[in-house]
Image (cartoon, rainbow, N blue to C red):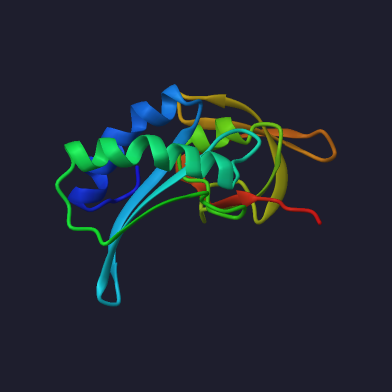
Length: 156
């Protein structure tokens, strides 16, 4: 789980079930000072991605709920996509991007080699492991703790 401030964690806890009801994944929340202003941001995603319409709809639904239940002094509230190349850090990230190519780097000593491009082809949530498939069809399994970096492989 991401490290969040108390305010960001409270916002996350309030917004998570609402996002789930709307068919969205609440990926993260942040509360931070930028210049003289404080920002509260929620990041949403789903398989296939989200656009501005989904961000706007979720913002419209969650904003009054946060105003009622969350005490904060944010000057600005935003709902955003986490971006195409954000790092995958939790098991649910691998579930969301199952079947898509990922760029992977592994921890030294994991025995999994260097950088690899492979598809996530299965997930064991209990063991926190992911089965990957290389382009040549070779499959291998890795624990999330053995992955030092994973991002979506974007081809233009």
